[in-house]
Image 1 (cartoon, rainbow, N blue to C red):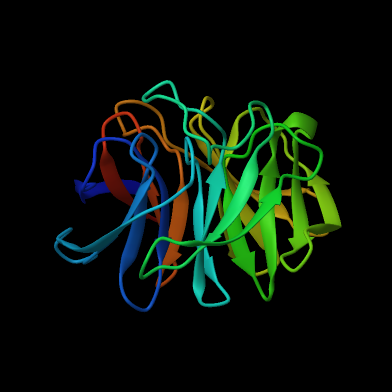
Image 2: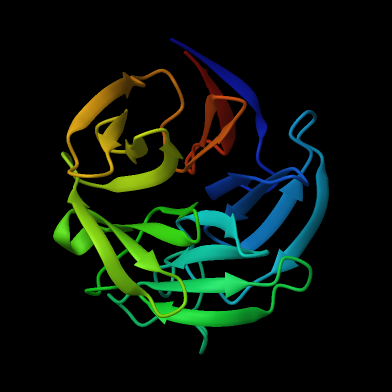
Length: 221
């Protein structure tokens, strides 16, 4: 296993990344601004201001960005549009304007640090119950729930029969069976590698961002 630091994020606190056909989207936890960048050079293409708050996750589906919002951040003053304290929200956002298209409460409340689009549904890290929850994005009805093995579940990537889940404090990325949460694989990312936060994939390779160092990395397997 190798880790390649590809480039720095366009802002200091990247806490959500997602590959799309246009490039790599990165959202900053402090500014809550989403930026599309060229994945080859790290050069910004365009940015949008969003109504997300303390953003800790990003995905793409149904022609829009989906952001995981956790309420007023320690990095800035609270705003009227912030998610309520202790009650994470998911925002569906127009990728051209940043306009909020829809807003949904996190099932069961609590925080959310990861989100992944999966064939017309969404997977979420439901931190309060130490689970991953698959929901219908039309009404956020819970469709399926699996346990996670460790605390502080973060970025998610669906792959084959499983879903990769970052556990930031333990510095591991664990692949779980989507049917029952059974562990299928594990990647350790000990120091001095950048700390793993959010996760995405391209051409079979996992990429992650470090919200502390601002670095975006590729994992070689």
